[in-house]
Each structure stands twice: as structure tokens, then as C-alpha cells.
Amino acid sequence: MVLHVNLKSMPMSQTWSYMKSHIENPMS
Image (cartoon, rainbow, N blue to C red; front, side, top):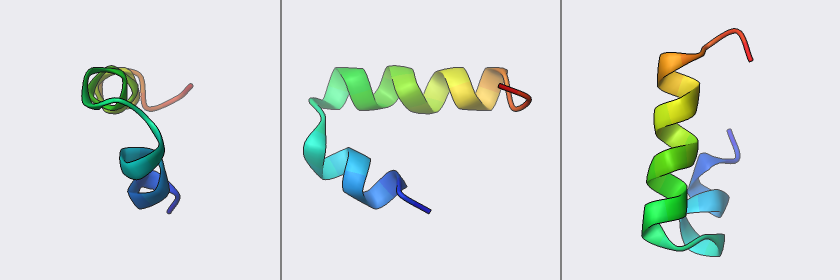
């Protein structure tokens, strides 16, 4: 999973939005 890389590469708010969108839309 690249999530750990994303957490370090993105601002926290952007990371949270990224995670949130994947949690709400697992098919996308």
C-alpha cells in the first residue's frame, strides 16, 4: 500500500480527504 508514502507527501487535510474518498467510494 502506498498510503504511508502519501501521508508523508501530502498535507494532512489533503491526505484525510484522499482517505475519506476511498473509504466512502471503495470502487473508485
